[in-house]
Image (cartoon, rainbow, N blue to C red; front, top):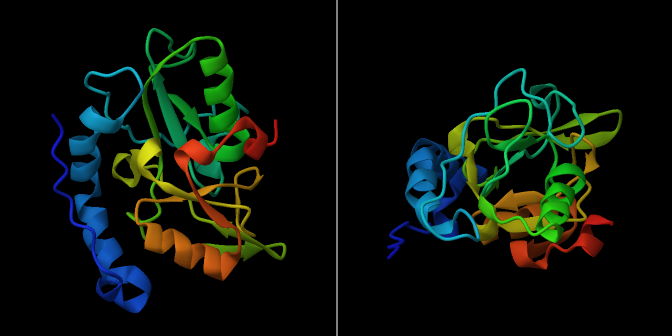
Length: 202
């Protein structure tokens, strides 16, 4: 049985735009991700594999771009009985809307079962939003501790902020962070289960 003892800080804890809280969460993020992985990683039951750090030369298993060369949220999927041809599990992705979710839906349609799905948790990192060619881009965070189980996060969809392949979904473990991000950059906050092939654009 899983015991979830993680503290949800109040909005009052988030002084200085959440910097103090994010700094604390950044240090504990790896522990939290590891502790939760066995409970929340996939839809097959049992202990889920832990998230890994994405290497500087790792390519996206959907589009082939080198993940570290691009901004935005990253993801990784461990499937039961299905592994990448070019490297050890997990499958790795440089974008969620354009790469991770299409891969997830395609393989679920083929009857495959996930062992774990992880995406960048922007509540657990010191992210930046910068402008390039008049478009805002959110930073990328490939370290293992920056990932959280995808099912547990709130996603800002339809914001003005871009990732590796254009507008992307931006995940947060703290729903207050997601709401604040949507207030600043537009979009709606949805749960993992709300993300459908239609929302992805298939």
